[in-house]
Amino acid sequence: SPVSKDSPIAYEANGFIMVAFQVQEKIVPATVIKEILDEKVEEIELRESRKVKKKEQDTLKEEIYQSLLPRAFTRDTIIHAYIDTVNGWLVVNASSSKKAEILTVNLRKTLGSLKIRMPDLIPVSMLLTHWIKTNEYPQELTIEDQCVLQDNNNDGGVIRCQRQNLFTDDIISLIDSGREVTQLALSWQDELFFVLNDEFMIKSLKFLELVQDKANDIVTESEIERFDADFVIMTE
Image 1 (tube, rainbow, N blue to C red):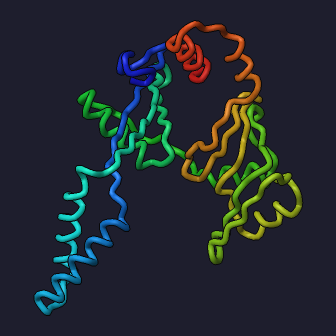
Image 2: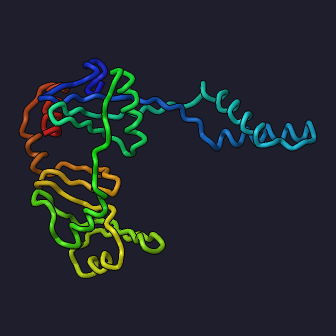
Image 3: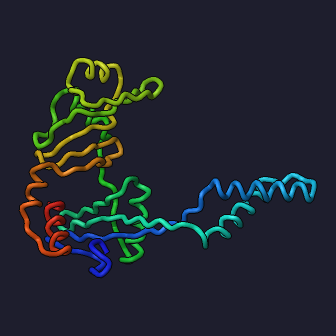
C-alpha cells in the first residue's frame, strides 16, 4: 500500500492514482560466496589431483548461493508511482529505468494490460545545449547554476559545473568547441527544483518554499489526511 499497511493498495485523489510495489531482496555477499568457493575448489583439486574448470565452478557457486539463501539478510525496497488519468501519464519514482521497469512489469501483470510507451522526444542534450547557447528557453523555467558538459567529438571527456553562471563566455566557448549539455539544473515557477539529463530523467527533485509553505499551512489530524494533502499538492 502507498500509505500504510492497513490502507488500500491504491490511493486516488482528483484523478490521480498512487500505487506502490515492494521488492524483497535476499542479500548474500559476493565475498562470502567467493571465500567458500575457493575452499571447495582447493579441496577438490587436492583430493582429486585435477583442475576445477569454470563450468564446474559456476555450478558450485550456484549451489553455495542456494545453501546460503535461508540465512541471508533481506532488504525491502518500495517503488512508488502515480497514474494521471486526466493527462495520461504514468510517473514512477525510481533512480533508474531498470527499477521503473520492475514496477511497470508487475503493474501490467496485476491489471492484465498496461498500454504505455515512452514519450517521443527530440534529443534532450541538443535542446539543453541550445538553451544555454542562445539564452532562449521557456519562460516558466529558470536555469540554475550547475550542468554537465560532454565532449562528443574527441575522447568523451566530461566537465561538471557547480555554482557557476552558465551564460559566461567560458561556458559558451566550451559549447562552441563541440561540447554538449547532457545534464542541467532547472527550477520551475519557483516551485520545483530538479536536474534534467539527456535520458529525460528528472533527478534531485525538490519542492521549493512556495510549495513547502502551502503544505505547512494545511492542518491535518491523521496520517491519511496528511498523505492526502501532500499527494494533492504534489500531483498538482
